[in-house]
Length: 142
View 1: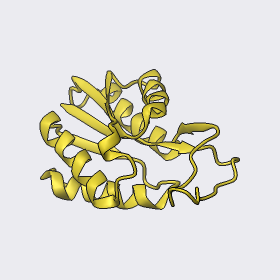
View 2 (view 1 turned 180 degrees about the vertical axis):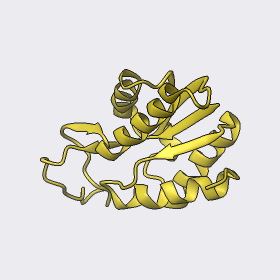
View 3 (view 1 turned 135 degrees about the horizontal axis):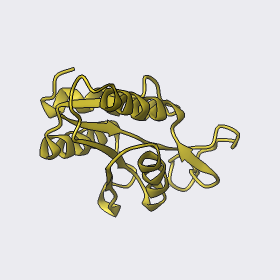
């Protein structure tokens, strides 16, 4: 079995959030972490692997974000993911929910996992919608 886990780098909860007036986007400067809810999804993948009922050949962490998001992927690998995929390009910077969902769905389609896991909640609203879009547009069962 191959498991893909969608993860996201998010601003630290203790950092005050603000909108950059020049871009209209959330200012993501400051300390960032792997979304704490996504750590639960990685742990669930590890529990499936360690349970031994179903053989898990590979756990892949997938994210879309700026270059700094690689830190979230490093954390995902340290928690047990075998490898990671980072979607990062100036062409997708600031993508809306539909574009983010589409990019993630195409990655899932190429990876062809047997199971896709993600945190039960997100600390950013747009990620919640992207997470909901990804399985529905990728053809993966929910």
